[in-house]
Length: 142
Image (cartoon, rainbow, N blue to C red; front, side, top):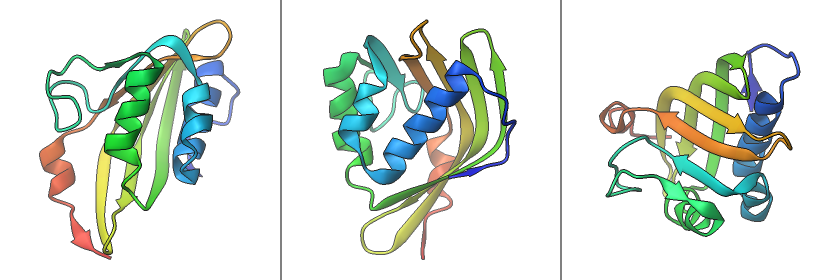
């Protein structure tokens, strides 16, 4: 992970960095442990190939199923965060997620990625603002 945002400690920023680290390592169990029982993941927000109804993935079981559909099949993820804005119990990170796919293909996803935590620092919400068409346009062989 490349972090070019502020280094100031903030509970949501810490949770976001832990989330990105777990995804980078392919550590599903570690990733799921970051979430509160009633958490929701919207990645991307709205109707998508990962969420046909556009309502998000609610609770650890559904979030685990999201991992299996969207994350598990990727060989490696790289996160480059260009900036980070913390307020209240949330953080919004601006950056690029690069997915290295089986067979040597690569896709870059530019977006704003938000994380909201509870008082214990558990993730309540992860929301990813990105456009599938823009990501698909970056598809290439590495």
